[in-house]
Length: 214
Image (cartoon, rainbow, N blue to C red; front, side, top):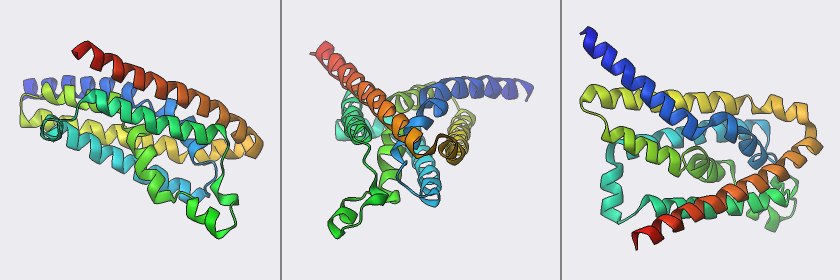
């Protein structure tokens, strides 16, 4: 029994130390705040909660069935990297333009506004919270599981990491209030540039890996 506890504790530490840096909740919080700068406080809370939930479900699915899903649809991690890069680049471009949906007043502009539900799924849930790195980590950790207890430990670790993301995101309102509108606009443009660079790097990594396989 003691050996089992020690083994699971070691695997739990491995899971947390792998997933937490890959998800990087502190690093992606400024990007999350910039993406949701034009939303009301209640909407931002909704986006944070749903985004973390989507991230949890996604990582659990890939941890349990990831290799099967990829094989069934013929999807590679490199393709996911390229797709994530494209989504990130589009979001970064909008952030660079400092587009704010809540100030839109015409019917056409209201239709163009992305709802809190939509942005919670993508790009916040996927690929901001659950990107190629996190999915790769979940797949690798899943491959190292040797028992049902290991799977339970992995799932628990995923949930714990996503609860951490949710907790940090929910504290974003205080950061927004401290920066103010002008400050958030400046941060939004800076984060937009950074996000676009990350997007380009994602695409480069994906394309480079594909070329190596050829």
